[in-house]
Length: 262
Length: 342
Image (cartoon, rainbow over all chains, first blue to last red; front, top):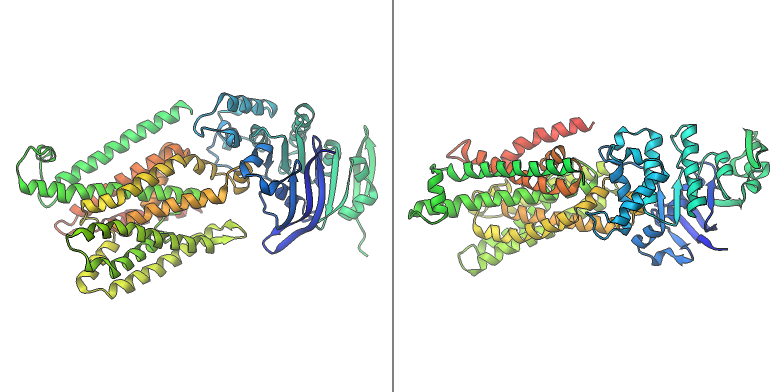
C-alpha cells in the first residue's frame, strides 16, 4: 500500500497538555480519509501535526515515506496544503489576491505572477466556482462563498495532498454538501489525496473511502464507512446508541441517543 | 496588480513628496533669521559669499532637516514592520519599549565612553558611529524580553505584548534616568535633551552614522514587504504556505530594532511616528505592503519635518524638542485608535 502519511509513535499537544501519545496510523495515497470522533479526541490535533502547523513532541510523521523532519517547510508546502478551521484574512483583500497567495511555495518572483501561476489560479477558481468573484473583496462574500475561496487558495498550491480541518463548519446544509462535492471531484478527477476532519458522521460516510475513528487521543477503529458505521463502533467512539440503515449502499445513521448513565 | 491601486500609490507618493518639500522649504527659510528662497538657493550652490548664510544652511538647518527625514523614515518603517508581525495596529517601537531599551544603552554608552572623548579629534567620529551599535544591543535586549514574555502557548499574545512593552518602557526609562543623574551637570543637560527627542544639535556626523542603517535595512524591509502581506493571515495559514514563520519574524524584528536604534542614538526617543505613519499610509493606499511600506516612510519623514519646524518656530526663540511636538500630535491619535479598536 502506498501511503500518503505514516505516523509512528507520534506524541503531540499544546504546551504541557498532551493530546495523544505514541499514536500509530497510516493514510492511503490517492483516497479520501476522514477522521471522526467526539470533541477533544485529538482529531484536529492529529491533522495539524500532519500538516506541521503544530510541532510534534515525539515520534515521526512520514510524508510519502519521507520523514517530514528532513523536509523544509517550503518543500512540504509543495506537497501538501492545509486549510485550517475558519481561517481569517483582511476583509479588504480581494479574492484573486488571496488565491494567488497559494502560489507562494512555487513562486520565484514574489511580485509577479508567472504564466503557470496564472493558469493554476484560474484552474483553482474554476474547480471551486469562484471565478466570478475574483475582483471582489472578501468582506462582500457569504460564508459559503468565502469557504470556497479558501479552498481555491489551497488548490492553487497545487499539491497532491490536501488536509481540511472541518471544512463545513458554519455553513448551511446546501453549502456543506457543495464544498464536499468539490472535495470529492478533486479526488476523483485530479487524484488528490484528501485527509479531513468532519463532525457529521453521515457526511463522513458518504464522502470518504476510509474513516479513522478516534477517542481520547487513541485510534479506536480504521476502515471503510461500512466497517465504521456500525452500532458497536459508534457506541465505543461517541458513547451513543445508533440506528444505522443503508441508503443507496451508503450507511446512514438515522437516529441516535446518548448511552444511559450507569 | 490592478491599475487603480497603482495610480493611487503614485499619486500619494507625489503628494507626500510635495508635502515634504514644502516642509523643507519652510524649515530652511525660517528660523533665528529668515532667508529668502533666492538666498537659500544661492547659498546651496555656493553662489553667495556670506559666511553667516553658509553656516546657517550647511551647519544648522540642512543637517537638522536631513536628520528629521531619516529618523522619520526609520521610525515609520520600524512601526510598519512591528504592526505587521504583531498583527496589531497599536504596535509602535516607542510603546513597545524598544526606544527605551536602545535609549538606555546609548545613555550607558555616553556615560562610560562618550563624554571623556567629545573633542574634535578622530575619536569623536568613531564614538558617534558606535552609538547605533550600542543602541542596537539595548534595543535587541528590550525586544527579546518583550517577545519572550508575551509568548503564550507558542503564540504572540497581543495584550501581553502591550503590557510588557509598557513595563519595559518604564524599566529602561528608569535605568536611563539613573545613569544620567550620575552624570555631571552639563552632560546631564545634554543627555536629558537628547532623551526628550531633540534634533537641533544635528550635524553631518550623525547623518553619516545613521544613513547606512536606514538604507540597508530600508531596502531589506522593502524587499520583504510581501511577507507583511502574508502576515495578515493567521499563523496556521502562513506556515501551511511554506513560509518559515519564526525565522522571518525574527529577521524582520531585528531589522526594525536596528532602524530604531540608529534613530534613537541620533535623536533620542521619538514616539508615535511608528504608530501614525503606517496607519495613515494604510488609509491612503490600502493593505498591500509593497505600497504601504514606501508611503509610510515618506509620511514619517513629512510628519517629522513638520513637527520639527513647529518645535522650532512655535515658541521662538525657545525651542520645543521635536519628540514633544510629535507626542502632542501622537497621543490623541493613539487614543483615537484605541477607542476605534474597541
